Length: 199
Image 1 (tube, helix red, strand yellow):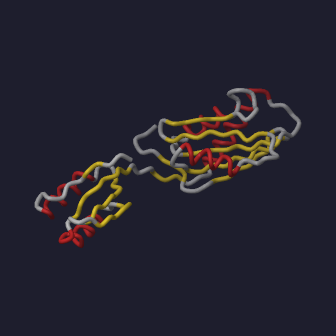
Image 2 (cartoon, one colour; image 1 turned 120 degrees about the horizontal axis):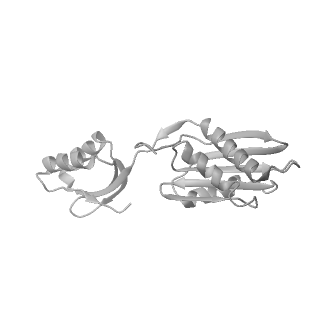
Image 3 (tube, rainbow, N blue to C red; image 1 turned 135 degrees about the vertical axis):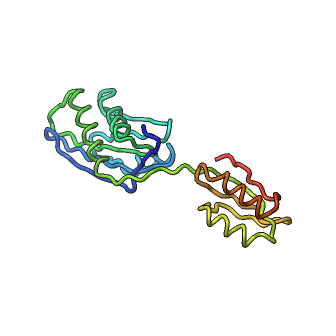
């Protein structure tokens, strides 16, 4: 995969009939395995013959054949996600059996193909990695400090008023911390520093 990872901007659906079986693919962006699994439960169709799926979130991935022969559905769906160079994406393919057996090779082509064509319909957006930091801003510097955070595109996650100042937790684009740290030091004469928080 290239340096800039992409995900889907919005949920996409694609349907196709293959040898009398109806395949309906749904694809969406997800931020975690838990979110992917919850979404699969939400969009699965109880009376469909199969609800096969796969997702990738960074190094974490899973797939499920839901009763189809092993490796004939979930794996090709995952291969379609990887083939498009996508991350943080979940795909569910619903199949209504039409009476003609496709065989393992036919199923792999059907599930992988429908998933790939569904993903190709989507609009992609780059994934911007953000890291979380904390800082204690003295009350005297509150206005200037908040203005500075806005200038560097920091996203405020939490604000807590303490005795010595305002404790802020922020999300910042990876690579932007050196500039912010320097500007905070200049503003506060070295009193304000960034603390990396565990994501």
